[in-house]
Length: 308
Ligand SMILES: NC(=O)c1ccc[n+]([C@@H]2O[C@H](COP(=O)([O-])OP(=O)(O)OC[C@H]3O[C@@H](n4cnc5c(N)ncnc54)[C@H](OP(=O)(O)O)[C@@H]3O)[C@@H](O)[C@H]2O)c1
Image (tube, rainbow, N blue to C red):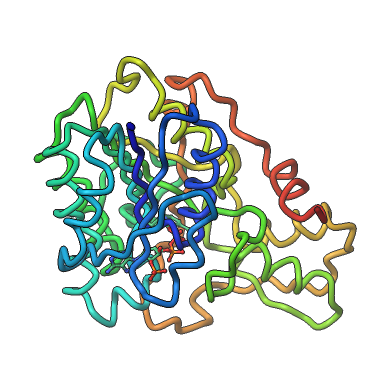
């Protein structure tokens, strides 16, 4: 049997991606998903074979190799994804976020590698960065993710590997809670109440709908020939929004007047880690090379917040 491996399948993106592949790949392709903390095995979606591995140290990697000897692709979603946690322990962030064990596995088994990177490789001083814009991360998270892209470009077969720079990901609640507040769900709760809430008016992102990432991943897994021409792509949504814009748009979609949204500057809050101001991205290249139309922000929000 051929397999596809999703690392970090217990995390927010990994849950959606592994479930999507489980439901959309041919039935003779098995989906294997990894988790790292013992308590999180149940977060890997049903029907996805869950394997525990520490991808920072490599403990458990043999179990992964044994579970999928014929490996078509790896979707690397495992990471220390919280900038503050990376800032607090940069060596640990680099050990996991620069995916040496994953790259070795992909190369050994001849698998495609779809690595999830971030918009935080940019320094935040310009709008609408594309693949050719200069990278200069301002925090440990961004540095570890840029080092990962460089490691992959240097060590992987160019016609089998890509780093996809995701912007902030929004979507429905995952099937199993991931133990942290998700921005869309936080905003939704805020705009449905009456208490005043502050949102940054000067931090710009291109929020990307989680199900668009699933479609991108699927198309890269099933393409008979490698369809991409570059080693790194921007993967943001179609609209550049400040966090305050994000909140006002969610309020409108949710039928709230948004009167309790107060716009403040990011500089008014100390988050213990530098956050780049404008890391909005122009992502037309990826969507056009794959023939995928990105979901409009309001439509993605509407689909994310509708009750099942
Ligand atoms: N969410 C966003 O808005 C966003 C934006 C831009 C880029 N990204 C990137 O997208 C990817 C997925 O993000 P996410 O939000 O889904 O992250 P997440 O919810 O924090 O999930 C992280 C995953 O990594 C796993 N992991 C942590 N430490 C590990 C270790 N030592 N060995 C193996 N696995 C380990 C976790 O497993 P356990 O649960 O078992 O610990 C979990 O499955 C990341 O690369 C992130 O940098 C995310």
